[in-house]
Amino acid sequence: MTTLLVILFAIGYAAIALEHNIKINKTASALLTGVILWVLYIVSHSDTNLVNSELLRHLGDISSILFFLMGAMTIVELIDSYNGFEVITERIHATKKRSLLWTVGILTFFLSAVLDNLTTTIVMISLLRKLIKDHDERMFFVGIVIIAANSGGAWSPIGDVTTTMLWIGGQISALNIVTRLFLPSFISLVVPLTVLSLTMKGSVERPFLATETYKLLSKKQQSFILTLGLGMLIMVPIFKTLTHLPPFMGMMLGLSILWIVTDLMHHKHTRGEEMPEEEKKRSLISVLSRIDLPSILFFLGILLAVASLEVSGVLHNLSQFLDAKISNINAIVISIGLASAVIDNVPLVAASQGMYDLAQYPMDHYLWEFLAYCAGTGGSILIIGSAAGVAAMGMEKINFFWYVKKISWIALLGYFAGASFYILEYFITHGVFYQ
Image (tube, one colour):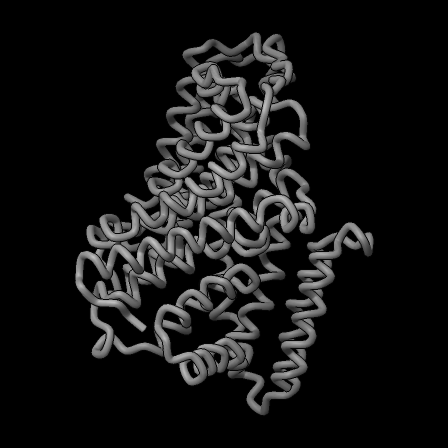
């Protein structure tokens, strides 16, 4: 049964990767794969009630991700409907490709540490649409956004879900992970930035912004919605820290506040008159109709499929295999990071947390720090290896093989550069070289 699960997952993965070749939307392939794997698992299991309980347990975790994603997409779309990102784009004057590439990369890196890599990717892609007209040129910048978002999230306890898992699980402390992983994570971005900028020449053409469409808006209103929207996104990790509730609850709180504020703005502006057409387009109800629902369903299918591999023991067996066949800690953790480019890093890290005991590897041990780096940055190697990549794939319609050809190799260079720096840095500061 385990072998059949792996084979079916591989077929589904191939169908997703070959979306443009087989002319079947990746969302349909992901949903079909997720459902079939759970059907196979429950048919082969004697206790159907237990399987259903496991499915519902995982569905709770999956739903929290999906609602978080829906909330983030809605807030970003709302900011965009008020032309709020124009406030930022007006302050980015660089039009030369190299300068703009570094500006976008560094901004994404630090923004991802404050928010999270998924939300940051959504925000930055929306911003890039205001800065770069040509879609083919923009895709290279989106590739850097994916790398920068994952690198920026790895060194922050609230920047990437796997780092957050290790933080909550007691494997790492907040201050230590920031100080230990900042430089390796930054190097994993700087290397791809340097390589890609060497091939870029000339300037970008900015799209025509139809400001007349926003004639009912003032710069003050645009700035207010941008500030309030980003403030609600920044509030999410603070809300989680204070209340210990899941991040999607903070996202729903921020969305509800924005909904109330914008409804009051519409009411004040129209003064009881019929809402103008442009006002209707900016209402949150209208914004909800424009969010990328297929991408959300794609997440559902992928996460259901990965969950089936976890409950069936496939991922746990993989971890045990690595531990038995590869005794070198560096090789094991680097392999987990590479595997996260194919398989979601959340169950991989969860399996690692269960495999290695805190009594043997206490808080802030080399293993946990290195795992946070590798699991966080390894997802950049393939576009479907991280939430940031999947969101970018859906928003910009990036072809899987285009990413493999143009971005994967420089992401891999950055991954190994940061990993090598971390190993060397630890040896210099602690006098220990782990094997």
